[in-house]
Each structure stands twice: as C-alpha cells, then as structure tokens.
Image (cartoon, rainbow, N blue to C red):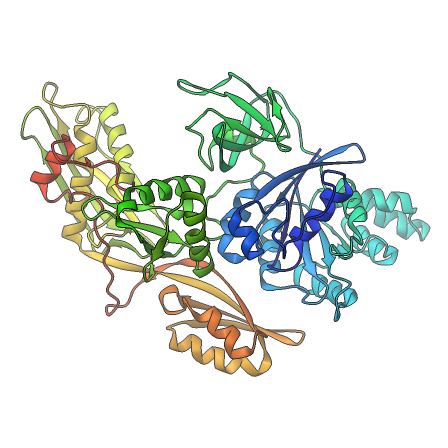
Length: 629
C-alpha cells in the first residue's frame, strides 16, 4: 500500500497527471480533461466549470500488486487549507513542476513545507511536450532552489555523489574499491528516498501519457509503505463529505489499530458504515489505510481518534495559511437568510477555517476567506449545491486585540439567587505571538477543583471577542482570588462569571488593536525591483532581504495585510505576468493609532450585566455560550 498526495503550483498539470495514472492502472477507461470539466477527481460543478481543483479528492488504484491511495489537491494558494489537511494523511508526495515555467513560488512553499514535515517526495517535471520545455534547466533550478539532493535516478555519477555524501558505507566502498555496484547504489538511494533525505526526479508529459508508468514505478520504489501496527488505535480526520444516502462522512487516515462497523467512537455514537478509498462498502478499516466513516457526528476535521502520540507529525490547523479576510454574505432573496445560515454552517463544518460568525441581533452572516478566488468559488457552491444566490460585501481584514495595560477583572455573581460565583483575574499583556497563558493561584478550599475546571473551560468563550469585537490574544491571565457558596452556587455559575470578569479586566486595561502582518516573497525580473521596494514602503512594509537567483531577484518583506490585499493582481498587471509573489502570515503587531477597526458583538455584552444574566438563564433568546453560530 502507498498513501500519497499529488501537489503543484496552479496549472502545472497535476490533475491531468492524476487522470493518466488512473487510466494506466485501469481504474478508469478514458482519462478525463480538466479543460472540458470531465476530470474524475474534479466532481464539484464549480471545479468542472472553472477547470481548477478546489477540494482535495481521494482516489484508489492498483499498480503491480500495490494499492495506491492518491489525494489530488488544489494548486491555487486560496485553497492551501485543503493541501494542509491532505498532508496529515500522507506517507509520501508527488510534486509536479512544469518543464516550461520550472520552480514557481507555490512549488517552493510546498517543497519546504513537506521537507520540514519529513514527508518523502518524488518530483515529476511535466509538460515536456510544450514549446519552451527545458528539463535540464528545470532540474538545475530544483537543485539550486529546492535541494541539492534532488537527482535523476538514471544519472549514475550524480547519484553516486549524493548517496555517498549521506551514506558512510557507500563512501567507504567507493574510496576503497573505486566503484559501487549499481544494485547497492540503487538500494541505498531507495532507502534514503523513503526517509525523505533524497528526492528522485522524473519527467514526462501527462497530456501525452509519457512517463506515467515510470512515475507509478517510482512511487512504489521510492516512497515508503505505511507502518501498520495493531497495538493501539490512532487515526486523524482530514476531510468531511456529505453522502446523499449515508449522510455525513468523515475521511480518516488510520495509522494504528482498526475500525469496524458498530464500533463506538463517542458516547452514544457508533460507526454505521465504512467505505474504502475506492467507494466500496467495507466492514473494517485497517491500520495504514484511508477510508470514510459514517454515523459518528462528533468527528470533525482535525479530530484525533485514539492515541495522538502515535501520529507521525503534528496536526496544526492553519499552519500553512489561515484566512485573514472576513466578508459578509447576503442572500439575494431575503427569505433565504435562514437557509443561507444553515448552508454556511455546513460549509464551515467541512472547512473549519471558514469560521462562520452569525450576529443574532441583526442576522448578519460573516465568513473568513483566503482571497478573491475562494470567495467566488463559495458563491458558486452556495448556488449549485444549496440553490442560494448570494453576494459578498466588501471584505475586511481580520484583526485581533489584546489588553493595553495590566488590570484586575472582577465578577461578583451573587444575585438573583440561586447563584454564587466570585472571580478576580490579574490580566497582563503578553509578548506578541505568546497566545493565552493561564494559571490559578487560588486553592481548592476557596474555589473547588470542579469549579476551577469550569473557569478554564469558559476562557475560550470569554476571549472570542474583546472590547473592540475581535479575538483576544497575547495575555497572561492569573486567577488571584474568588469564592463560592456551598448552598447557593449553581453548577454553571463559574462559566457565567468567567466572561464577565475577563471583559471587566479588558475594559479597565484598555484595548490594543493588533493587525496581521504578512511575510511576502516577491519573485522579480531585475527591472521591477526598485518599483516593488517603493510599493512595499508605501504599504507600511519593511524589506528584509534581496537575493539574486539566476535571472530573477527574490525580495522578502513584511507588510501589513490590510495594505496589500489587492497587490498580487497589481503586480501581475505591472509586470505583464512576469513577476509573482507568495505570502504567509508572519504574525500580529500593534496597529498604528490611526487604524480603527471594530467588529459587531455576536452576543450579549457581559458588562451589560442585567441582559447578560437574563441571557445566561435563557430568559433572552440565544443564550451566551454559542457565540459563533
């Protein structure tokens, strides 16, 4: 078995290559076409119309007695979250490059991300049939920009140089005997490749079907088998789908143990059906495999099933990129507002980074999106899948906030009876990027352990919105005093009191707006370097480094997200498509005083104590706990 993903910069031909692999292995009779909207892995209407992948898609095939589970992923940067989640399920990857365009910005981002995650890779130089194709040039770019350990297996001299530099036994044989047997050299190269230390490079044309069989052979030879152990249970949910018959299904990569029909995964929830990656009903999912589990509604993207310490790599939602733009979604037909809310809820379950917000008082619906293409695709999905025509208002940047100066936040929840919860928090600013650091100095005699546990449970609710309406971060919170009553304290009193005390402290300490800052790499012909440096300065950015790589200059800068939302399109227009850029979130920094941004509160303000207590006791519609949806 092999579990692999196929990745590329947009338009490098990865979906066409996937179609050829399916055809060659006999999984399909005729290869579909991306341009004609008939690709088998692009089954959403929006994918077929646009000729791009927007969702990761799992397919299964057989090659020379080996089962291949292949995840075809989007190439556009707006759908990087799909790439990230697909990587959780992988043992290896195929990275596709164009023989004409060579190493592109997204190629570098993908390669170095997988390199850090220790995911072994095979590189495939595609489109060798195109005018302007130059495999030798692209191979040199790969070795210069990605890794010197990228090698064409047929190049024995280069192979010997690379393997001997990483394998002492091969080096010793070479020095003593002046040669290394080809079988030994290839065997050691295969082991190094499976360990992610060298990277085989192949070439061909997916459109013409050239090199596909060699690539399939390479996947089996150079990428590792999954480790299969039955001792403990360990799996990860990397995607959610809706089946018209079985309902909600969770795509699971199982690393250890096994799952079976009727097996309980949550209280009162048992697996009702399991399908393998080819769509066939199965009664069991074995360690090392990928399949869809139905019947367990509690499974969410990122849910770890079983022992998390057995996961081969860290699962960190948003590590490759998170949405920095919030946009209001409005139905063209006002009567569909509730239908739109439910549709957006479902989409946010399938993609947690959408982070839907619903303002109960006004009915406003907001989504966090990656960019313009992501927004346009969502509009098409709402129309084709849910029958809702919707428009997206002017997007705004997603800010955060923190406390400006240290303060004590207090809540005295003792009226009207029955209730009793008293809290005093010391709230201090933390270092940028430190997140929330919480500790308690209060003993269990003053506040029993079960109530202190409730305080910790309520902190995420309390920090979803600060005094300016944004998520609160970079705080040191210390519970310094408090009390309960052995008769009057109600089980939920400390959950009610925690947001109240936190907001009281934030009000006293004042708010500091934090703006997101991007680290951008610009890939520029020499004549545009001066102009881009000037633009970076005008966008309140800072140039960190300039470096010449062949015929291009790579300029690295940090720029506030709010000032560069449209710059990618401007850069392409300015350079006639010759310049490009990649961006990722560097972090958040204090916004200048002239930058003002507030967000509508999604629920009753805890400092409006009368309404807040009524909402907490369900005397007002909506309650206080479910702020987002």
